[in-house]
Amino acid sequence: MVAHEVGPEVSPQSTPRITPDAATAGGRPVPSSLRRLDEARARFGGLATTYLDAMHLGDPLADAFADDVVRIGHGKALKMLRTACREGLDAVPHAPASLQALIGSLDDEPEWLDLSAIERDSRFIGRYTRQSGIVLGAASLVSGYANSAASRPLELTGRYLESAGARTIEVASWLVAITREGGLERHGEGFELTVRVRVIHALVRQSLREDPRWDAAAWGVPINQAYLAYTLVEFVRIPLRSQRLIGAGYLPHEERAAYARWRYIGHLLGIDPALLPQDEAAQERLEELYLLTRPVVDDYCRELVAAINASFLTAEVAGILPPPARRFAPTLVHALERLFLGDEIAEDLAIPATRVTWVVRVLAPALGAVNGILDRIPATLPWRTRMGERYRVAQDARLRSTYGVHHDLVDASPAGGRSHPARG
Image (cartoon, rainbow, N blue to C red; front, side):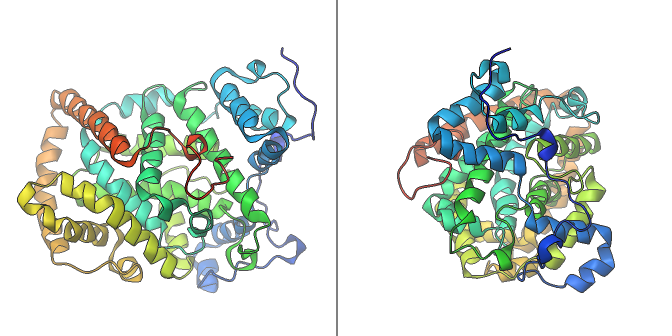
């Protein structure tokens, strides 16, 4: 056993645990940006209490390590983190107690996890790579911008308006790693990137903790447990639903595997078990509660959507259209966003209405019927998946060249532009 550095004691039991009075201790009120609280409590009972309490909770294990990043030095500390993820704590001499506690809490897989079943049931999801890429931008990411409190860290770190393309590529790098075979095993790339995402969140929380621009009374803790739990909805329920809307729905066992995979990813991200959705029904309730209480959309939310549309999505959609139709790419992007988000949120985000939404809605069932027939012919699945993987590799190379991105996550990105807390 390699010797570890003695530091402030941080136990794996320091993982946040939401109790009924967690948020009211010390008299902390519910963040003032939230709406319809009485209705939320009446409809969702204990879940609403847990969710509202979680607005005041960060991630004690990752936050303690973020403090040590400052003490030890950014480069040295994050190298320790990467080594601990790839090789284990024994490969990290003088590891601080905070890193021991963080990694130690993740070394053993939860009893409910069955990675082999998840991978078995997900072998052919790559056949819809094109569609999932569109959904990532136009549904998953854009839906998160309809919350002025949850998206505020992006504004204060300058991360999205600085480069919508770069951040989208970083998210895609993570998604590829966590869905690749073996990626979520203890020393896999997906495991490492997920833990690094968790620490990036902690470094952002740390930077905003004393930032006078952060209004804790209105927004709660930056990247708090409640909004962190909702990100699972953004990466599972919303994209699965959106792909069905464009005729590219997965088979039932593939959808179940997606919920199971993201339950484990949520565990790695440090989401409190009291809020971690176990299945589709739990995500559905969490989404309903989130939408009921979400803060109003503000101008920055609209700027985020305009940024991803103008600097990324429009160009990417144009690239898959035949040349004569490329001038209609902005309209098609708006149509897809309207379809995925619904008219209420689209109106809030100032996404223009277009008749093309109706056209997509009409054509999707026919496309879905064709894909549904192909999906039930086992012989078609491997070659369609191989085609999807070839497209993904080519697309990734093109995007990285176009946007000058040669790293995986922001903590490994070169300095330049506005500083980000995870860059050091």
